[in-house]
Length: 410
Ligand code: LLP
Image (cartoon, rainbow, N blue to C red; front, side, top):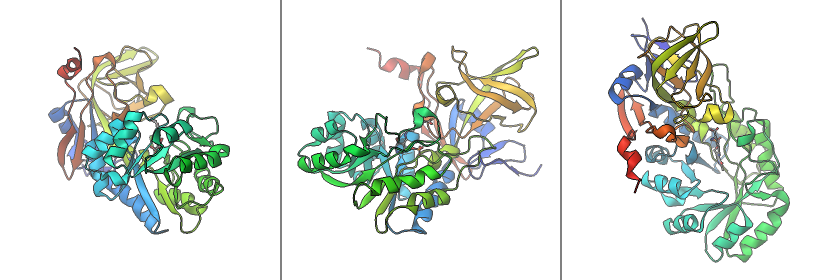
């Protein structure tokens, strides 16, 4: 059988090899499952590089004044910070822990932006000691915590834009825990000056997994209405395809939308997370039990679940699934996790080809906020992260062990 391409939901360069098995980054995922065990997060490194390039090329074609900032929360690992540092991106970190990982990945601190609606004094001190380029200040209290520090900052504004996405990941509306309301900005600017901070510009992030570009166009307009600033950081939020039916806007169209209403000469920053890493990663599992409920459905239970992918439970997020060695199929199946909750369902309505215990099952588009939100529910050790490139696989985050689970017990 000739190698066949797979849908755009899978990492760039994925295909079915001559044995009819999925290859990611040139590696046969059934063999990866054998070598590294399951569950595991498998990434095509070149996918992330290509998407970073798509961002920088899209901006470069339109302006000289831009900065692409990787939103590290989507996939906070030293290895991926290193990859994006090498690709010439900056990064944002949303906690002391993410800052630690970005520095471990070799990020120059000057290229880092520090976020958070409630940064502790210890996190602010850590960021300043390390020489973080900009702190994105979120509240009047934070201005006071920074008083007297000659730090470059941006002010985070909630621009009053409500994009269409899950309410948990809308952040730009006026009623939000984040940032300064538009009407408070003049007072915040005054407070920053009074506190001796070096205010370089404004920031807004309206939400995440947004598929219509209209809302993005308005950000620059709202921020520009709040004075003249050399830097405008317009946040992240471009949505990705989770199922083959999804058709998200291209990076070039997104960048167009961001720039459309930005004034000439202003440096425009954006902070993509999901759209840099989401489709680069898949999760591989092993099918354990197949339970056919007569006249109802087939439950295909795998060796992971809500500990490695919380998104279906938190946001009702929809995914696809395939048997890695037998793509296609028409058996309606519900992919169940192994956790002690009926809600631990990864995919409600997958179509599989005669699933059997021992099959390797793959769920695509888990590259963003999968590893990032992994947890130890039911004391399940968290999966490893495997980077694949040109047929070579390397573990960049090892699997947790039972000893890791007891290590913190005193
Ligand atoms: N900038 C800021 C200030 C953010 O808060 C975020 C995401 C981003 C950039 C990156 O947004 P992205 O390009 O990835 O959409 N756990 C949720 C997503 C939460 C996003 C939080 N902030 C999920 O799994 O859908």
